[in-house]
Amino acid sequence: FIASPAVHLDLYPKPNNQQADSLSDEPPNNHSSASSYIKSTQPSETLDFSHVQLMCTVDAHRIRVRWLESLLPSIDQRPKPFQPATMSFVASIFKSYPGMFVDGGCPPFVHWSQVTGEATCQPLENCMNMARMWAARTVGSADMVQEVIQQEMKRLFEKGNLLATFQAYLLYAIMLFPSTISAGSIHQDVMMRLQELAGDAAGRGTICYAEMESTRPDWESWIIASAKRRTLFAASLFDNLVNFSQGSPSFVAVELAGLPAPASKTLWNARTRQCWNQAYNRQLSHCGDGELLISDLWPQSEANSEALQPKIDRWLSSVDEFGMMLYAVTAHTYNHNG
Image (cartoon, rainbow, N blue to C red; front, side, top):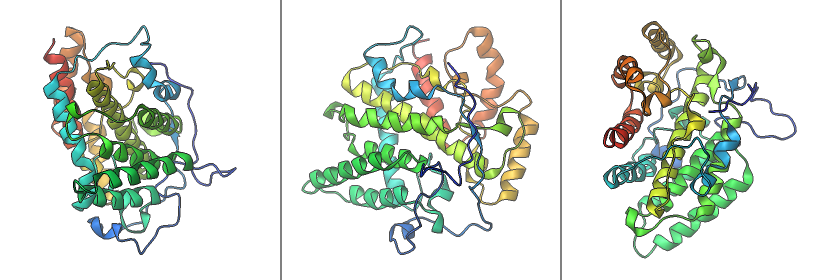
């Protein structure tokens, strides 16, 4: 992949009315009914996202124009030999994500701190309400719900490029995707806008400086970086799903190659700074060979595959359901044809 120059981001305050990646872009609505649908107790300590610093290690432009790859593939692109059963599995998993808001949780690429108490930001708060409407839709109301979702997507896209906007837009796209792959797909404009939001989010930083140095970052920076990477992975896989439903090819996302794979469930679910610090310190002590990269799950030479297996096994022993889903898809896709 082509790494773009390092970008230093001081996400608050943001001059010239530019919006920054954060957990909130508007004052929280303390009277929203959506908040009551999240199992949220107030954090035992204050999270301060005013000094988040991230580095961009991906080609954000290539992420923005990924839709072109199915039309004019780059010379370095490798096709993904997806099987129908794999894509049916992916579709079922993705369709479960919006409903997680209704059941009091959140999708695995949205961090709990983004939807907890007063920290809930407007794009995700609106998305929670929309998810309830989508989950309760009937045959008679389905068209109306779809129209409302499309209107909200247009409003979101015109508003800005916060991480929460990217996440909410992805969830709306998932809601619009048919229940069965054979039923058709969603409009190409939706995917183009989703990829533009993905590129904007990636350009604002994808990894903590401390992560690059194999030291412990601050919790807030890690939350933003980790949630963003998970959302980038989810958006890329969703793009594969849409391509498959349309009979178009998908290619290995080489622009994401250098990003760490999803972190352990202990780190992702940690509710206090002390618990998170302790978990991260343990990870550092156990990972002398560095974090597993998402590209480590892709096809490797026999020698590299054998060398990576202990690291992959260690990662699998601690990862959450999102990481396990990514592993299942890559293992089935490549091993099936390997």
